[in-house]
Image 1 (cartoon, rainbow, N blue to C red):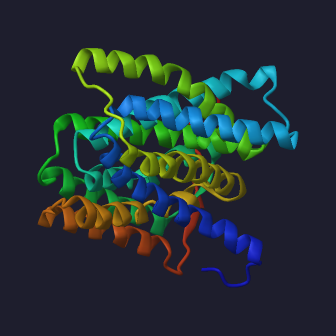
Image 2: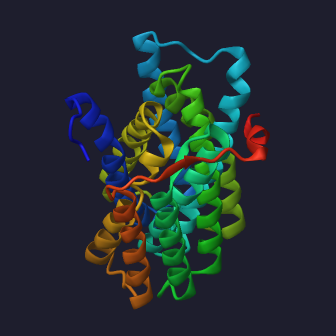
Length: 309
């Protein structure tokens, strides 16, 4: 897999794997934090801290900022990709188990590959199609009997997050041809924090939930904000800018392995047999994807142009 690659190329190839491990651990950390803080308030804290840090770093480095003609694209990424997607993912974690939300999100290789074919015209090999079918089968097995603590709301929020993030990931990749990933990530998070605060306050008013801050939340918040949000998203956008979207997405199944293991060890979550069977199918899909046989074609459907907005 890494044969004949330079050290820099190997580092870029490993970035998606590191991101998936970090994001997998974030599900568990989020569950701990959300015992004392509503999901959308956590979203505001994550994006305001991470956005300010990355945007400030970009300004200090003198990196090129967004031009007027690209502000519309930035708003789409900020609202649809970060606010709606990440907010839905946090709510999915709140209304289900950490492992379940992470595992459904591991279906991203399917949706990202579909969007990459239609929006970027990337190649899709036969083995990749087969691996996607395996991942879909795993999802159906899990959804059919997801285990304890999973609600319909949690499933719906997970699916919303899955589709929105996959679509915006492709738009980020296209935009990375013009701007540094630090600028894209910092700007998008800073803008996404603006609707997150009023949304969190409205959510608290409707549900009656409150923020119960304690010293024990400091370290989890620092970890989630700086490591799982600022660093992980920066690594992801960097990897997307340097490699194929379908290749980066192939590492997603490592995310539920991390969250599932940590959820069992740290949160005492249980795994049903169907949950484990579905997880194995999804992991098998990535093994098929990395297999060394190549029968590929370029699929450019007639509706290709509809996605170039």
